[in-house]
Amino acid sequence: MHTAVLVIDVQQGLCEGPDAAHDCPGTIARINVVTHRARAAGVPVFFIQHESSAGYLAHDSREWQLATGLKVQAGDRRIRKTTPDAFLRTDLHEALQTLGVQDLVVCGMHSEFCVDTTIRKALALGYPVVLVSDAHTSAGNAAIGPQQVIAHHNVTLTNISSFGPKVTAVEHNQVRFWGDRR
Image (cartoon, rainbow, N blue to C red):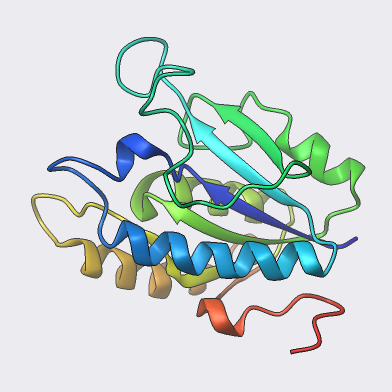
């Protein structure tokens, strides 16, 4: 097994209210397509969940739960994290090594925080990354809107060359897994 899918922070609290990420239903639908195809090809799926020590996104709170509509299977793995980096102070890297994972497919929320940070750390650890270009999202910020954040990260992350491994951005319907017969 050489590939794993990381679904980063697709949690209920990030999909609702005035600060909800852009196009959560569409993003979740595209993630579900990728994870369904991954499972069919025998590729492990990891759901990463951010948590705070109290309040918003506190462990086991309603907001901390995986988002409504996200399809999760019993064999999927879950990783709890407390920083934007899904590798920092978690067992993610060890779990990937145990499975013999050599490259990653990444999607999720928020493009400019946890998706970006986790991808950069993955590169530093030697993992080439496929960024699912239409299956990561953001709420935007005071300077730029969510679509601009998404587009910026699709371009910026694919232009990083200093780590050795690279990021390739592809749309959800173009993600390929070994053994995928589409």
